[in-house]
Length: 64
Image 1: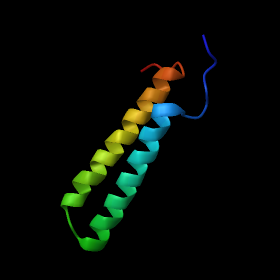
Image 2: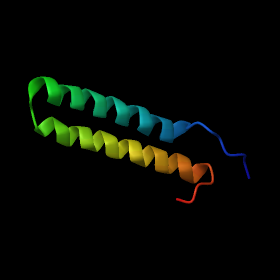
Image 3: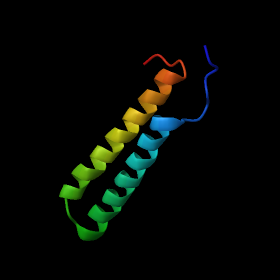
């Protein structure tokens, strides 16, 4: 059994980075352009972040 890591690595890190970039870009775009549909894209980015944190939690011995 490996020791738990405090920072995400691998696929979890990729999911977190991509999710935060998409969420930030879409949130700023929705604010600047006033386009409500970009908020849906931002929510997808936030969901990808949650998947990354859940994957990291599972690898590091978390409950889920």
